[in-house]
Image (tube, rainbow, N blue to C red):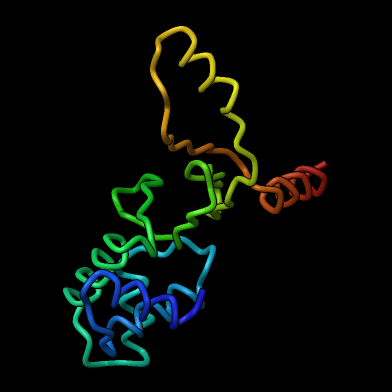
Length: 153
């Protein structure tokens, strides 16, 4: 994904490329996989483009979502976070959220295919998407906890 994809998607949807839209998109691309919230995106854009307002960032994110380049995810805490959309994914991917450091890891496997098929067979309901978050402790924090426990012994 790059600026060309943004330009093409905007044009297809009847919108023009503005400096603000470009700056927001560049920040999202540069921070791919970090699941930034609106304020974090705004702060990063403002460093390069100090005249931008937070309302412009909100509107730009809404537009990017509308044209299918990003999607928002809710991972708790009441803030929307954004990730780049992947049109090749059958479903939204899962998220693994560390309850100690807050790291968010994208789940790589779609582990719910069997459950979806069962739902269809039993209920006649076809699942078209799902959103699952797993909360726990990441590898790094587990290692830190183990080191602390070993030091205390």
